[in-house]
Length: 214
Image 1 (cartoon, rainbow, N blue to C red):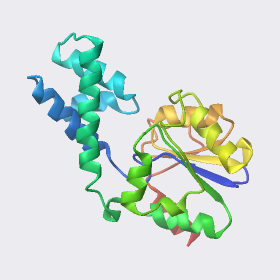
Image 2: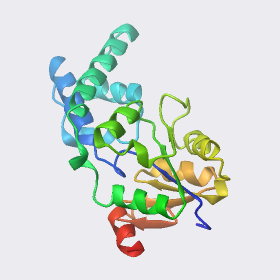
Image 3: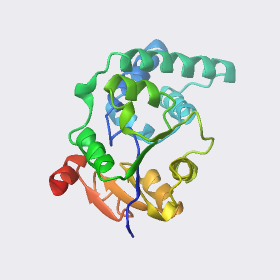
Image 4: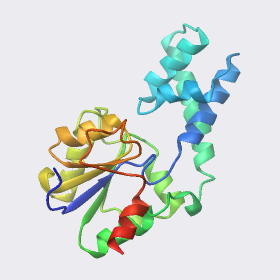
């Protein structure tokens, strides 16, 4: 249940920006290098999954069994391509209402944090020119446990010096909603009600909240 919101914690991908297309392009390019195709349908299996587990799924699709050293090399190559793609991003790629909602929360005195598994979060925020809209950034460089473990959100609350019960998480993935609830926080799901049924509230995008606050 959502109580008083003193802090808002946002996932990055699918909430603030959509970099999924760049992940897909990088994985597809990697598959092509190893002689097989990787489709958009295949890519659905990688949502909310860590980089190395994503690679394992990719190799299953390609029917390949490789040494760990080769897997590490592949994962590094994929990330290199992904970073190359996101370095070309700009503020036009912020999802509708995201920047406006973050600004509105800060105007009302609500603390804001990013809680994302992405190790490239600082670069993406810099490219989008919204780093200044977050009081704290907790990403894959600062946590060791993946969602649905609540570590990333609990660390965000700690960084903001706000009790978890006064925090609300904004997420587009089922594992993220579960992590928020395990942390004792409110959970706003962004996306489909069929996939995010455990969320306290479900919306299509942050633009809806901007309209309500307006």
